[in-house]
Length: 294
Image (cartoon, rainbow, N blue to C red):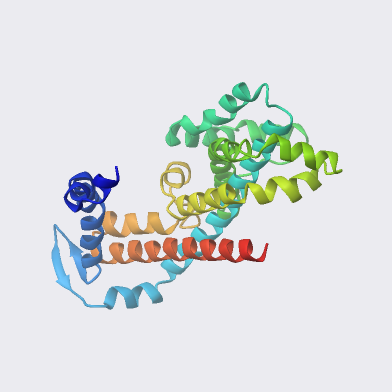
């Protein structure tokens, strides 16, 4: 093996095909998209050189500002909800349901494998206000409250969207975090219990520090996915009402393919890429600082 790893030709033969495919699938489209940021127009209307005008418009565009605020709000709320719910479920498996965890994991993981459109249609029916009353509004009216037009205002639509995405993904993070928790040696937990640690104190002093790497990985995975959310919002609210639930991805899609401005759409995509990189680097650096202090 050392002879193979020391041979540059062997390394090139082993890694070359993978690097070639990666370059064609990832790097070339990224560079192509970056080139579009200096133009306006589309393949139908033709392209016109604009220099840095797209970046100037990006900074001044109120639609981009609103979409950025919504994207950050969505990413923070959904990431906290997904990881907190997943971590709570994984702790439940480890300390109370280990013998039945296979069945429980299957039931909780089930929403993850459902198609996004099917889940969105399910939630549309659950929270339907008109022309028919959905189960949620029927329940509210049964206890003497008024039904709510959940998709009529951005605030209520956002929380329905948050509930749906947290429910869809918490099983994935529960399984991911469970894999990290089972690596904690049982002897260590037993020693902590003999020293008097139990309940929340055991979780805070032993379980949480030892599961921090997989917890940080889950947060990075979740926040990158939520910053790039598209399908669930498009299927449930279509970005509405108005533009109240429009993230950067949906704004980029509409700009590029509805309005035929590939250049400005690519500029929004470039800004989103920088945002994802900045958030990931920030979480990595914050995690590194915490471990050093600990």
